[in-house]
Length: 338
Ligand code: FA5
Image (cartoon, rainbow, N blue to C red; front, side):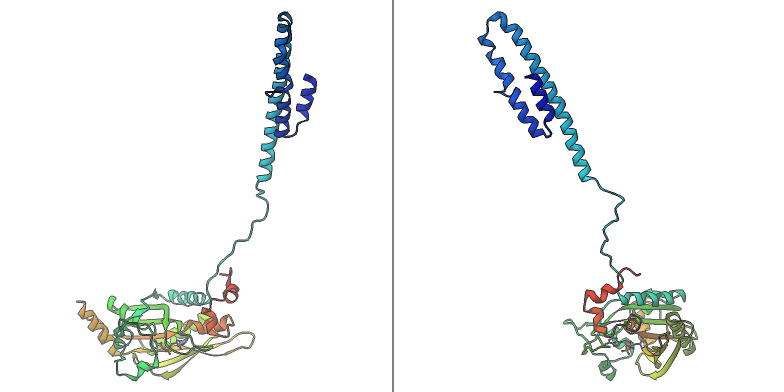
């Protein structure tokens, strides 16, 4: 029986099979257990010898069971470890990667150019009051220029800024000249949208104030920006225009030249020399805050442009509305390449 049991133990390949063998021999009603139970029927002198014999068999079987159990448990653990092992040499799964929105790429190009020229980059509130958005910029309530920029009015009389020019006022109230800033941010206009007009778009505003700043400085700065964007051969064009907060005022365009022969003038924005009324409005606000009047007699220039125009050309996006429709097919094209 011992020999047969040990063979069965060796043949068991799982812990379940081993348990069956164990039950068969040393379980409550197993063969060995039954043998031990039948000792009582023997004569006392036989009982001792037979008892020792069966006990030896039982111990041998138990030892074989324990041995086999240890082996099978180790094998099961090895198998589990092997199946759960991570192969660090396999190529990883690609992670979904984001990318910069084309407008942010253009902003980064532009602010990079101005930072190299020593400008400070600032941002400001999108919810404005009438005074900063219009009045202080020389646009009183009765002025027809208010109609040039249709406005989203908020319930409390405030408004969504129609341009970034109110930051000229805010920055000058808080800082003394000389100064060189560019402002980046969103602006809003209550107007019908088409391929080149959105109700929400962006502007980059520039402001330089000091002593004897001239129109030549303004033109040189715009030309420098054009070269930064389109290379050494870039040309700029200025045409007289009207903005209440500058005098004289101009619109400017950049000649956009590329090897595929798609050259053309790109109307970028407005500019001019800061109007003395703007400096006066800033000094009035400063005085009201207990600050010194420091802008009388200063000179400066300002400009404002729409980065969407640059991005549409650069990335060949035919309709401005694609930028903000959140269509992943549009934005997905800019993934990864930074
Ligand atoms: C202004 O907003 C002036 N604040 C610019 C300025 C600043 C002039 C400082 C002088 C001195 P304008 O309304 O023309 O100007 O807008 C400037 C630029 O914003 C435009 O040339 C155009 O590039 C862009 N823009 C205007 N309206 C829209 C629109 N609805 N959608 C997309 N871009 C627009």
